[in-house]
Image 1 (cartoon, rainbow, N blue to C red):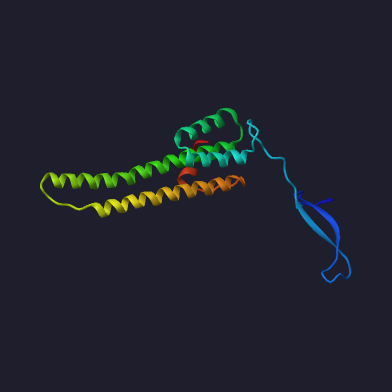
Image 2: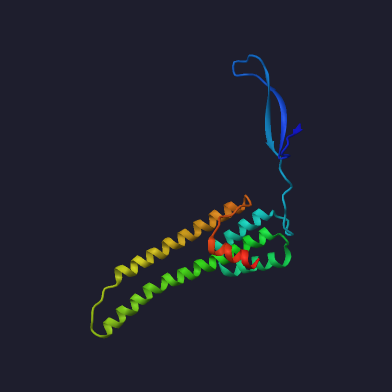
Length: 173
C-alpha cells in the first residue's frame, strides 16, 4: 500500500489482465481512507445526530427540537453540530410562522362571509378558502421534503444554504 500526495487515498498495486487475457499490467485501485468518525458524548456520530435533529424537527415538533438544541448547547463542543441543530429549530419556527400567516387568510375569508350573512348578504368564499387550504397542504409537504433533504445532507456533513436562517446563525453563533 502506498500513500499518495494528498494523503486521502491508499493505493493498492495489483496485477490484472486485460479482457482478452493478454499481457498483464499493473493497475492502481484507490480506496478512500475512512477517517475515525467524530462522535457525540452519547456515542453516536455527529452526522447521524444532526440528521436525527432534522427528522425530529420534521416529525416531532417544537418541544423535542428545543430539548435537542439544549442538549447540544450544554454538552457538545462541536460548532457544526450546534449550527445544524439550531438550524433545524429555527427552520421549523420560520415554517410555522409562514403557515400561521397562510392560515389566517381562510379565517379572514370566513369572517367576511359571516359578516355578510349578518347583513343579509350573500358572499361565497368557499373556492378561495379551499384554495388557501390546498396551498397550506402543499407548503407543509415542501417543509417536510426540505427537512428530509437537510437530514440527508447532514449525513454527509453538508448543508443547504438558507439565506435568512444562515445569516442569523452566522451573526449569533
